[in-house]
Length: 162
Image (tube, rainbow, N blue to C red):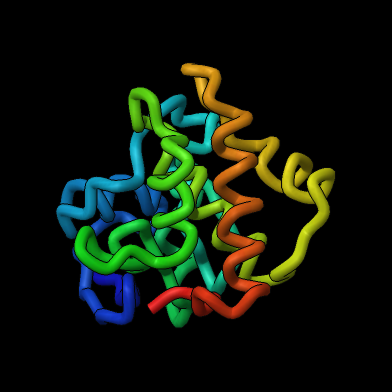
């Protein structure tokens, strides 16, 4: 069956079963490999992307529910030469160790900061909780989210995605 998806501002026509998880379409059809397959059960967050600005587990989200919705992946936030504020903060704080969870962490952080530009530390912890980091860089991740928030509030970095 044909489905139309808008990913990172570009319309795509996909030939796939409507129950196919978005993660498979992103990686296999669109060659967007930022979202990772971690658990396949929505328990780790490595596959997190934004759908209409909300963080979702792409391993659990069938493409049938994504028609006329805006999907943003890590590739849609910024570039290597021009990272968005959240990506830049994660780099500055050296929040990645192995890097497997980081795309999902950045996407979840972006969703929070798009909704609440100045979250408390408790709000950051609570919002980031569904995403797991096996390397244990949680304190750096929290510092990165705080840094991005502080820079956006101070006006040194624009909020939102490109």
